[in-house]
Image (cartoon, rainbow, N blue to C red):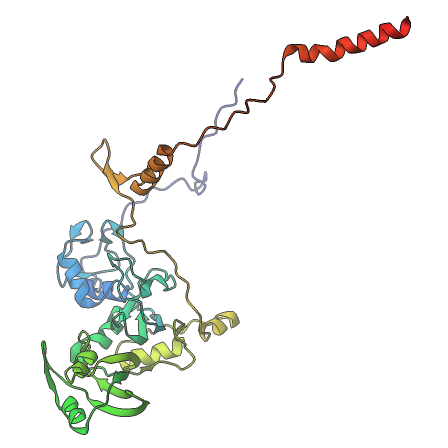
Length: 379
């Protein structure tokens, strides 16, 4: 006889204390409301972008709060469910210390995450960060090298980049030619460009060899190719441009081209105080000896993924259900090479006309010869 299954029972229920049915407590109408925080501010703190970018993201309808599309300026509490493209987000209601990374950008890399041409990007080398996103503080064009700062705090990035804060940017410039005293004065007073007047806060000659001369310039704007356009106004092309300082952050001499350095917690706290941003009240996390050594060590980043050009991507074909999928067969190049290979026929091997074909009688001849030899021996 099969043994009957045991019935499950409440482990907390006893003969003296039977199982109790709990009822959901009603909310107290006299209780103070939960404190709310601006949604776009929390999204920026989560490292998804600047506050301005988050306002545009909310306006696009991709962000929902409790299943309802979010609105600009909406406040949320820690009990609200916020989703981005149906993906739940963990918002930092309690501020955490952001991460800051210094990168000595070489020439030939772009500061963009999406590039249809598939060129090398600085974002391909960034280390992975948990529950956050790296934000580039300022941009450098493809032919400009030097200091590039990354952070996981949208507010800190906004404090560096917004024009109203006028954060200084210092560059080392090498030009083909030499400026006169009048031209240097004019560059400090201002020159009319296509997008409005522009000027250097200071410009200092740093010497040079031959036809090339170095200059140190400081300005408080970040317009596209502004330094190059100011020199090109005097028909002096820039042959080398390198950013050496952005606000209070200098490019350390030990960080060579293509290397990275992660700022220590105390240095990040100093940046937050410089930017007049709230510093997390929680005590700093105690680092292990290995983490301390790693935090102060300059490292060479590795490329995490290979960027594929749009021309190199496999073609997409329509399937039976109407969706497009990558074509898994041979590419046009492979098909053409295969057709060319099949079209060229290999020459047939030449037949040797003098070669004698082996016959059945050749196999029986040795046996008959041995039998005749034995009969001759007996006689």
